Image 1 (cartoon, rainbow, N blue to C red):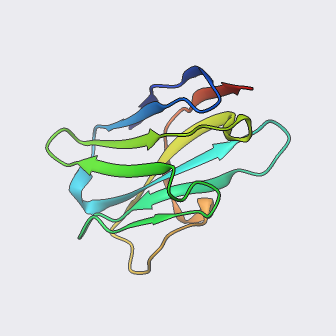
Image 2: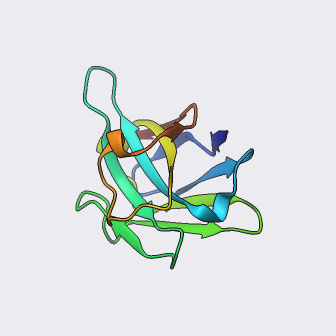
Amino acid sequence: QLQASGGGLVQAGGSLRLSCAASGFTFENYAIGWFRQVPGKVREGVAYIRNSDGRTYYEDSVKARFTISRDNAKKTVYLQMNSLKPEDTAVYYCAAQYGPSSWPLIRPQSYNYWGQGTLVTVSS
């Protein structure tokens, strides 16, 4: 099970930190991805972190603004979002996939487990 939290309303230029807490599986064996979706649009990837070495990958739209990290002891992945823009407004989801053999794992279809989403709203 994955539980995403930390969303809210923030002004453009502000920051938020999202958390994705895992339970019920061996967290350190799973890569985690953050995705986001605006109603009526396709779910898109944001950032990803591998389980084996903590390697990360970011989509161009968030590169240099967002940072993904994981704490295996707490079974939690974080997404630090800085310099937020109105176009970052979306429901953010975290997803997990067991020990991927390829990297980066950017397609939503590659992930088997999903959290419920947390809403991020950035006002202009």
